[in-house]
Image 1 (cartoon, rainbow, N blue to C red):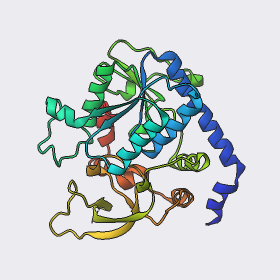
Image 2 (image 1 turned 45 degrees about the vertical axis):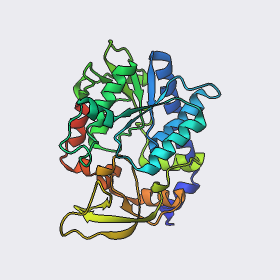
Image 3 (image 1 turned 60 degrees about the vertical axis):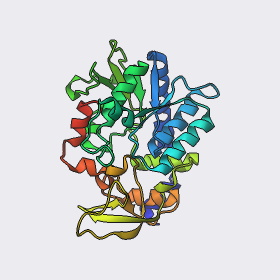
Image 4 (image 1 turned 135 degrees about the horizontal axis):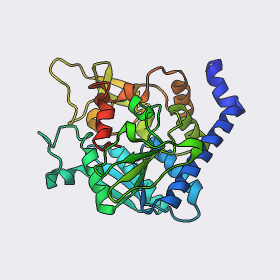
Length: 311
């Protein structure tokens, strides 16, 4: 390791920084439980939501969580992540509600040209809004962070959504002195982000400190990929090679996990959390910029999806 990375492991200020972030996130979770009548915690099985589970444990154990776990499943998620999701929910003994994009397709509320192969990532917004309406959730807690993407950076910790589930950056409420306005009318809801102020590096350092288990695709492994537009597209039935493209077997890991149709791994030989921390400390490409095909369609793609109800 170089001197800068050594400092990450050895400097006590790093641990104090994590203590502060943890304390803020726990405070926010307890604020949701106190102020909102029917909240939910979004849990996909990804690294950020794994951190959110640990924070919920610290906020509410030994009691039960004051909210169910909710996942919006596109039906095109990585099998390893779905298996991990179910395993963790069972271990915690918490209720898991799964909203299915496949069910939305069958109802006709989501329409794709080819439901078997088209990306379902954007369609999650419809299924999420349907799940919120069905269970009458007035707040959904999630693991989004401001460092992920420019549209995320505009968002408040308590992000107000109107009766159509839409996000308007000009209609967000002030959060002076960590005071949060949680009032909503029937049909409106809040999206709450307790780890807004965390970075990808903070998340990995917290995972290391808490010794949190993760799906194995976060660690380096051999996988067939297709170099395409600066990304490494995983070779799957949903993402086949196009004519003239070359399939390579590379050592890769996933920095983020999501719908197979738009989530790419990165080249890496990091097989431990400590090695991932070392890589993360020196990377100059954002998490989503390095791994998400859907965010490359335009600079405003995330903001557009959020205005349509995306998390």
